[in-house]
Length: 276
Image (cartoon, rainbow, N blue to C red; front, top):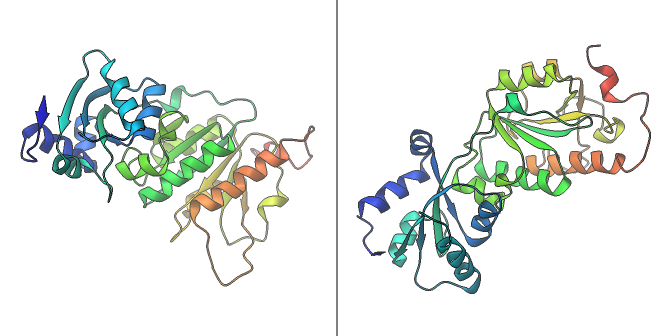
């Protein structure tokens, strides 16, 4: 089957999934690009339909061949104008799929003894959330908790995460639900804020910890700052007054990984501060 018209009902319906409202209504979302689709396939994400261009590069051709082996997956060859309508990129990829949105429950997630968690609160830019997920994956975080903000399955988040959003345990919940879950599991909360004298490398991160990141513009709300076990900052020596949130997350996560290379627990471990 081939579709060349952007006015085709299937194409119009798929293109609407670029909007958050439609993704939430249908429970579907778009994945564009061979790398992202490959990672979705690796974790067994449910795919509904696939749209493939005519002139595919070798990697895209391998992905298209893999898609053809999936039973009951509707595969449609489309023209270049159709790909452009479905794409969120300046240079559209040759393959776009429609997938069913996974919905893992935070309440059913059991963190490990020394869980390293990253919490994003109200992030407003999809690119920032995607990059934050990529940093968390690279540093080996156990999970990411997304409390409000942009849609986890927007095309920009999927792209900027390079598809690791599918393999990295990631949970979306309201702020109060995330807060209650962290308290219930006695996981210390480390709030990042410039309004403190404590640098991030001065805190013991070898025990369980949730690193909490707010927006670049406003930072964390007073609720999170008050509930935090500790508040830390990234020292800034130049004229810039803030770092990109994904850079801050990467620094914090890799400091935790560096500390965890060494055996033993410090007397100032954050876990000792829970409930104090």
